Length: 520
Image (cartoon, rainbow, N blue to C red; front, side):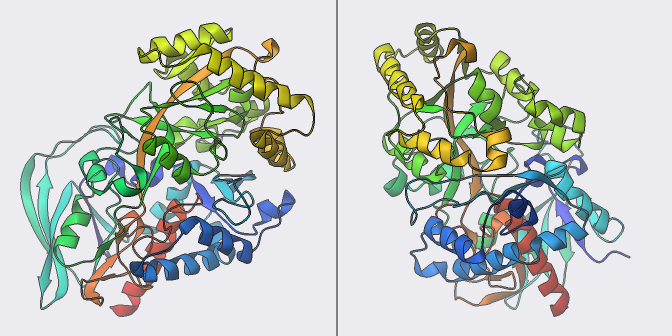
């Protein structure tokens, strides 16, 4: 017997939405994986890191603050055990996303907390898909257009039935309407995601006063159907939408050489060693180094109106430090293939990264620096990269690796990271001259801003109930996941610590589901 109905405007092949495409990274605090690596974490430390990253500074941050505290206690408490009981497992190495570096009281994770699920995004989905099989009715190709509201309470939804579509997961599906529906429900839970696939909405809410003008070129890290339209409709019908100007867009986007959706881009998950250059070839000022602070580096790039930036590195660095976001880019982990996984500690660049080196529109690979700079200028056709500038930046950096100490702050971050075993073995390259021919060829990667996640959303209380314009919950209406800013209408504040998006969806869905069950 069905205990609920799930409506999805996409086809069955898209079940799981963005979770399927994810790397499966989850934020845990003081986990067994951390302790085995000698990483000392605590709720107190995680709370302080979250506080400095979020930067809550608005009256409407009331519920986001409460959600953040609840999630931190969950991440430091029952989260891992609960997911472990569902059958989930994690890679023993712990990633260090948003590693900061600007100072103890400034944004960033003080320790590695990014736990990669064995099976990546599909590995997160599988246990929950099994649990709802036969218990929840799924109706695909049903696009919700509006809420049914009677006497101030939500009593159901209505919308369009779209024609069947057999396009692949993430591809553009038809919007031809072949019917309609009008359903009554005791409660409605909205989980329609963010706005990253709708660049019109991204530009509408872009915080120009903080980040400067939106870039002329935006790549998409999510499919077109991540359009935010239902969120906007729910807000138009009385729900409170808060913090829509808080967004999480990545600075390390590269065009997918084998795209699935329009402007499809992949985010590079970088280690800390690559030189980050502006369009002229000048190094970005510290602390804007790879993997340090997404929001702050985005702000530097967009307020300077850089149309793109560059990573400059070599084969030794790209082999060790370049990860690519997405389940499809990490088939060893996604398919739980131990033989493929063993290749990560071998001598060769991973097949996924090598494919971008061979076919990627944003990659330049050359044997010497002069040819590399020439290739960079040929790629952009604007001749902005100055060879003498690049040569000076690289040589100044290379001189600093000759001693275990030095004055290069980025190299200090690199050396500090390698004190952690997993960083040393599989994530962070040993400091060495970039121009060492033995570690060639040289590589430059053009980086563009990649739209991804919404940090604001529908305001919800700690039961997942959507708050109306008057500040009170709207009877019968709940929201979870990105549409609710991952909790409360934006529990990240201005910055995320990573591993907190997928985890926020799991936590918010659990909270709302339990509240609905208790209320019915």
